[in-house]
Amino acid sequence: MDIAGLVREGARIKDEIEQRTRILRGIHAKLEAACDFSGKNTARLKAGGYIVKITRRSNVRWNQERLALIRGHYEFFDSVFAKEYKPVGARQLEGAMAADTTFAEAVSWARTESPGSPQVVYVREDSGVWGAEAEEQDAMLTPV
Image (cartoon, rainbow, N blue to C red; front, side, top):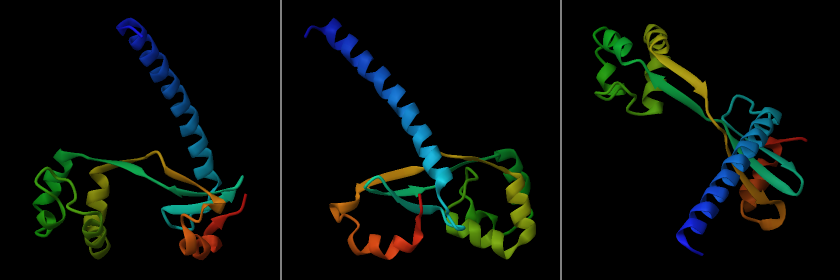
């Protein structure tokens, strides 16, 4: 195949991948909506010969100007936010927010959170990949 043919084939494949990705994202959104997460970020369901693990994701953006205003009011601020004003770790931030409700309110004011695409893992039910872990998690499976 010559260069022009490779370019055409590459563009065709790229378009097909983009189209299938859109379809797959729609499927993943429906699977996420069908799950009972029971306050957790991960759920599993069993259907069509597969066990499907769905992990909810979210995208968080931090308003740097607002965080700069908050910084002067909390001496522990630098222990939970890096210099670019992003959390040093989710657990540290959650702990600080749980310990100080005014800090939690201020930090919530400075962030924007939007739903992300869920991570979805497909494993054939009879593959044994999750082994005992899957058996332990059967109680968590969302019935379909």
